[in-house]
Image (tube, rainbow, N blue to C red):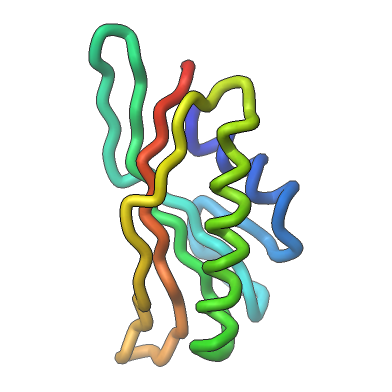
Length: 112
């Protein structure tokens, strides 16, 4: 499962917790990983992953986002991953809750 592969990879590369869903009592800084889509064509698997970097400040979220992107650039070194490419990243702050976050969207091709 691609979520588990990337969860384990990011957890080993980053110094903050990485989750697949927001915990009840999250740390001040953490990363959320979500698969937003996937496909299979000619036995080649691909997925789109949204990776949110959450921090107490906008600068902290932006900085964590840069670390996430560096870690995702290294994902190609994993045996299961054949392609990892940044689709887009942007400020994704929630104005209602004032939760500072950035989101990086990656297109990943992998073996299942």
